[in-house]
Each structure stands twice: as structure tokens, then as C-alpha cells.
Image 1: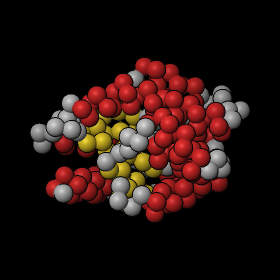
Image 2: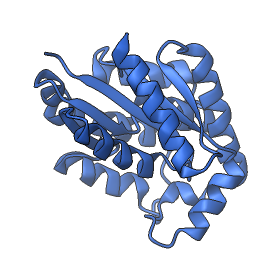
Image 3: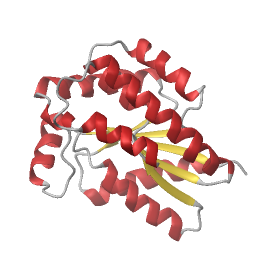
Length: 209
């Protein structure tokens, strides 16, 4: 049986990574074949590309270079890890996928959502998520969460000004209207317990279809 590809999206500090791992435990306990991964990363080659993209010292990286590096990491991750797991019948929970590129590079960097979408279509050859959960949180709240979390990986995107993060948020709003059948908004301003429950409800409704 073919598996399911579920992606988790949101701005910095939205809390999606924490909930993703909680969902992994919940679904595994309930008998599902489950795997988790992340972008950029998830495999050796993509993790090396991640270290280049997110290195805080690479502040002079061009926006197009950034978009192409993300697409390259995505391609390798997809063919080496995600697709094989899906073909084995796993539910794959992935921390970020194509929508991050569309919101961050396409909209916030000003490269154009359609232009970045075209780059990624070449990379993923029409392999899109079955379901995407967008963690909706005010950018200012998200950044405050980052600043208070000393254990979180600090990366180059954390150095961007508030205007950039606000544009990322606007980009995600556009994607919600562009892909309403795939992307579901999760109120990430709630308590972690409520956020987790909302995600469980959305995923279980999807499986009941």
C-alpha cells in the first residue's frame, strides 16, 4: 500500500518541529508505520547542503543561489529517502518542503512564487505532499520563542529583520489560498497541547476520507 506524505510548514518559532515529533509518537502508538525527516536535510548530502545554506557567516548568499540550493537538497532527499518510504507504505512526516521555498525565497526574497515553483517542479517532478499543516503564528511571537529557546539551532534566517519574517508570513497566506485542498491552517498561538490535538484531528479526518 502506498504511504502518505505529510509536511509541516510555518515561520520561525511556529513550534512545528516539536509537534511533528509528538505526532510521530502518537501515530506510532496507534499502529501506523511512521517516519520523520526534515528539509533541508534528512540524508547526508542534503544535510551538507543545509550546513551551507543556514551557516550564519554566509550573509552574502544570493537569493537565487539560496533557492537553487534548497531545490537541490530537496531533490536528493526525495529520491533517496522520501519516495522509497512512501513506496513501502510509510506515513512520512516532513519538517518543511516546497511551500517553504515558495514563501521564503519566492515571496519574502522577491524572486516570485511562480518562478521558484518552476525551479522546484524540475526538482520534484510533480511529487507533492498529500497533506500540509501550516502552523499559523504571528512572526513577532515566533521570534520571541526563538530568543527564549537556548537549545534551538541558530541559523542564518534568524538574523533577518522583522520585515523579512512578516513577508514570509504573507507568502504563506497566499499559499493557503492557492492550495486550499492541500494546506490546512493550525492555530499555533494556542497551548502546545491544543496545537497537537488540532493536528491529530486534521490527520485523522484525512485518513477517514
